Each structure stands twice: as structure tokens, then as C-alpha cells.
Length: 373
Image (cartoon, rainbow, N blue to C red; front, side, top):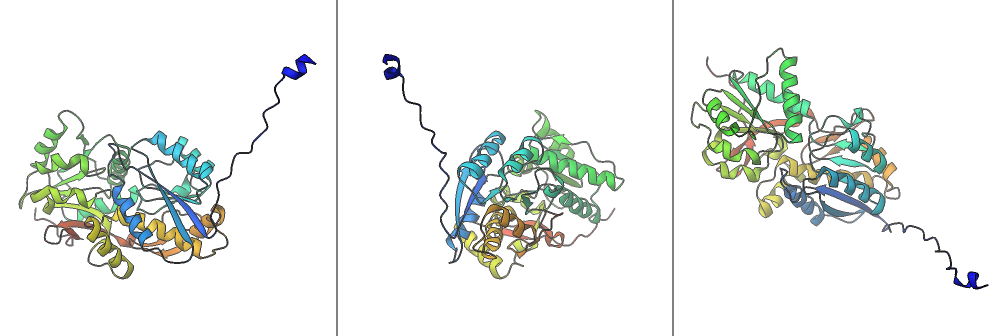
């Protein structure tokens, strides 16, 4: 009897609480680099999504949670799981450079919610984690083809300087560009790593004789090096990354005239309708938007369109199926996905941009005119 009296009662099992889900609401988690060393910073993408939220009309409501990844891939995996399992997100937007392989591919499979990527990545449909993953930006291969074609059309193939750093985005772009040159039967130049102790000096010396300089990865780490490059009529044409943020260009002064980068035709004065409205609102608040920022705006628009197609069926599985068969006219491009192609960017909307100091905004680069030998 004494033994029985001293034995504590067993702890009752308590079920894990299921996140509550407001009716007629789609929960979206946006995973961005809002701090940390990785570039480009996700602030521009968050600003663009806030523009969309401020314009949100009646109907299905999108409720967005912004999460700072702070440049950490490990945190990206943790927050992706938390969004899908703990927070009950119906869709996730990822605005940081990723490679859909290994641990991250497994994390995408386990999440089992539509994941929209705003940065360049190879077609997710061909990967193990790509069933729920959709890319809004052009692929690195698409960007490499466009860059190589522009360099050749302008007669600036040789001598060429290829510059990179050790970030994942730079490596992916550099590999795609080198692969495209080899496909064309052109021997690629040996990359110069700007992060090496003598990297900036080697770039300056080589740029003095180069006809073209291709810089892979986000622009911000190259800013000091770009300021030291020669300018004027004999300056090389400098190709920047699709990840270029317009906020990084205004401070490059004289060098801005020789810079070009791949983006979307719609991000210039060619924009009309919703695109022109977005550009006007964003510019009034933050300055001219980049293509990357506009892709984040389109990510919310695309999720909203998939939800509005069947407002009573807002679960992740049905949203995924609707995105996969959706054709949607966004601010950046006309997105179109199929079960075997999860890259929605229309190649015909890809264009090379340059910075206009008069307008403080991107404009279309002039058509290619080969240099005289």
C-alpha cells in the first residue's frame, strides 16, 4: 500500500497542437537573406512583396511571414521544415541562391508544399526535390546562352576576362557559362577569383586589354573592383549577373555606362499595365526595382492566382497542381509551367539592361553592333 501511494501518476499524452488555419486564407512563408554577408540582400524582395500586400484586394487573403535566413544554408533547411510542419504554411517563397540536391532536395520532399524560387536555378522538375518546386527566374544555362551570344554578336569574344568568387551563385553561373563556351567550341578563359589576395589587381591588369569582362555572382562584392576598371571609349564591356540589384549600380559613377546585365524587357520603360504600376509604386518608395525584386512580387501574384482558381481548395497539394498547369502574366514575364518543366520564365522576355544615370533606372541596352577588328 505504501509503494502504491508513493508512485506518481503517469504523464498524460498531449497531442501536438495543429496550427490553426484561418478560412479563405493562404499562409505563405518567405525565406530571405535580410542580414548576413550573402548578396544580394533580400530586402528588395521583401519590399516588393510588401507592395503586393498593400495592394491586396478582396477574395482569398495571402498572409505572409518573412523569415531572415541570414546567409545560412543550415538555417534555410530548418526554417523550411518549420514553415511546412510547425507553421502550417500552404506555400513557401525562397529568395536565396540554392542548389536542389542532397540535403536541400530531401527537405523539399519532406515539406510537400509549393516552393517558389525567385533566383536562377536549373529546372527543378529534373531533380528529386522538384515535384513541389517552381523556378520563376531563368536558369543559369539560359543566362549563359544569352551572355555568350551577346559577347559574340558584339565582337568582344577575345580577349575575355572571367571573374568569380567562392559563393554558390557565382560557381553555378561560372560553370554554366564555361559549359556554354565549350558547347560552342570556344576555349573558356581561366577564371580570376576576386576573393584571392591578388584577385582585384589581376582583374585591373587584365581588364586593361580585355574586350569583355564577365562577372559571375551578385554585384555587391565586385563594387570596389569595378570602380578601378578603365572607362571611356576603349573600356571593356562588363557583364554582370542576373542577381544584380539596382541599388548597387548608382554608386558606380562613370563605370555604370559600360555595365550590362541580363534581366527582363518588362523592367524598363516597356512595362505596361500592372508592371508599370508596380514599377511606379516601388520606385516612389525604394528607387528603381531589380528584376529579382519584381520576381518576388510575381511569386505572391502567382500563388494568389492559383488560390483564386478554386477558393475552396487551398491545401498544398491542390495549389501545387494548379501552379504546375498555370499560365500567368506577371510583372516580369508570362510564366508557364508543365508537369515536366518547372521553370516558368519565357526566354523571349530575357534582355540585357544597362543603367541610365539620367533616369536613375535600368533601360534596354542598345542592339549588338560588332566592333571593328
